[in-house]
Each structure stands twice: as structure tokens, then as C-alpha cells.
Image (cartoon, rainbow, N blue to C red; front, side, top):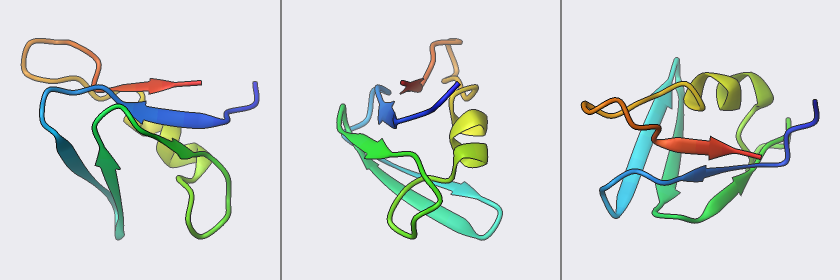
Length: 64
């Protein structure tokens, strides 16, 4: 499966995700690319983020 983009669909207008030493800044309903380039979300981090849920159990990210 080839991942192309990840979109933040949570409730807040912006979200900063920290995985290890890497930080990603998401704007509400705007996609970030998924690749190994420096500006994009790494594929292994995108897989982790796609499993994150809010307090009510709703997904925070959609991965395409």
C-alpha cells in the first residue's frame, strides 16, 4: 500500500504531533504529504498517527 497524504480531522484548529524527536504541525483539514523527504511525514510516523484517537474514540487523522 502506497501512502500519499495524511489529513488532520480533529476538533481543534491546529495540532502539533510529536513522535520521538520529530514534530509535525497540522492545520485543520489540510493534508501533509507522506514520504521520506524532509518536509513530509515519514511513512512509519503516518502509520502511527493514523491510529491516534481523541478522548471520545474518534479518529484524529485520515490517511490516504
